[in-house]
Image 1 (cartoon, rainbow, N blue to C red):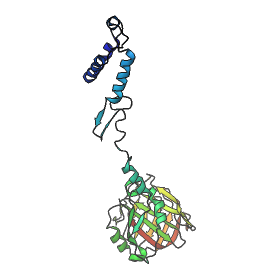
Image 2 (image 1 turned 180 degrees about the vertical axis):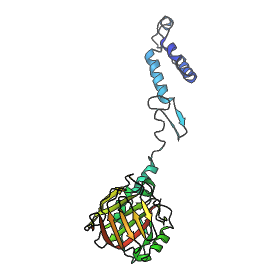
Image 3 (image 1 turned 45 degrees about the vertical axis):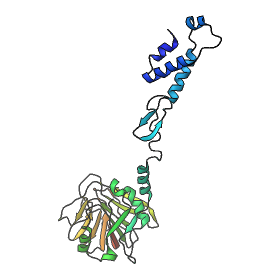
Image 4 (image 1 turned 90 degrees about the horizontal axis):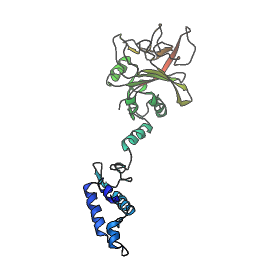
Length: 293
């Protein structure tokens, strides 16, 4: 019948009460006649009622939220719209902290002062993005074995490496200043003539002796499972077709590298292959680093 009748039917109880008070509290215009008040449109027009409803929607409708102590007014009047705007005004701090941690340089701990270093912080930072997800988060790497610090002994090598159950990074430096090695997520231990290791393992080498930034990484191909073989007489990584990707003799001085199906790697050291396949090297430095978050 009247404009305000259809409006009130769609309003909640509180709104209808407020609208009723509004309609009966405002006096008619001084120029209105009694007949016009009863037989024509009411003294509150549809425009004035709509104005009241707009004011009610913007001022009266408020909501509490379990995510904030503040009572907010939805900007469109729609319940719940934008209600979480002040829930976390500082943003996602946790994600930012993780990203910040990833950008920090690796801390190399356990190497005594005066020990001949093989792995530099800069080279560690270059290797780190290639590690599996969890080890990649580790900011501190711990030295398990150093040729210079702990002596030239394969038994000592195994003994010290067995103290760690997580992933390890093997770093080798040869007489030609080449630096290369392997990542093995299952650690280094005597394996009694059996291969072990997962598909996260890889061989790697520094591309240039003048820079620690550029790396070549050779990941597991899936062609075989010859990842790591740690015997009493040698340590080797990768195999197939009669060749090791990386080999260290029991003396920890002599070693070799060849292409192998396990990693489809290039030869890790420089020099001329002795048989068209395998290149020997003289080891002047070895380090094994424990890397775990």
